[in-house]
Length: 106
Image (cartoon, rainbow, N blue to C red; front, side, top):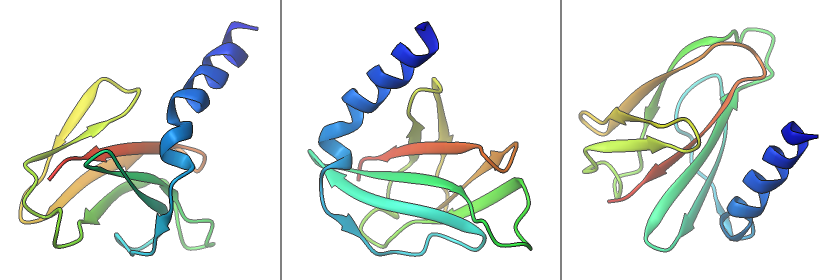
């Protein structure tokens, strides 16, 4: 019951972001992503692609030019940040069902 409540709380807190327009942008290979803009920040929802050649592991994200100057990204609900260098950042996807939500403020 508490796990379901945690998921419900996470979805409710993200609802204002999820309900905004999505923007088309390719962040890198072997990724499924959704890009949103809300209250002055970009949000990237990401997981490994379902392609047969796509496996869990490290992925490099190339940010759109308007976000490339950011110095870090916040990984929501994971209590961590990742450095941005030359407009890119890298993260790990431990399993095929792993997902991350990033907040980038230019």
